[in-house]
Image (cartoon, rainbow, N blue to C red; front, side, top):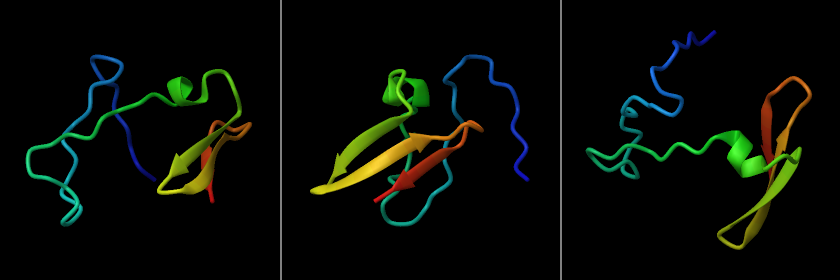
Length: 67
């Protein structure tokens, strides 16, 4: 199980490890709170490369992304 530590500011992130050719050296991924994406809804649809995906929050607070 992953152990998380409290952050000094709500959206502070550590630099992400390199994940191959798509990760640029010295860049930090943008952090978007799920509340901002969902905007009070349980489900939001995301259009990506011409395909529609659904991001859904469960009753247990987990996120599910489906195609």
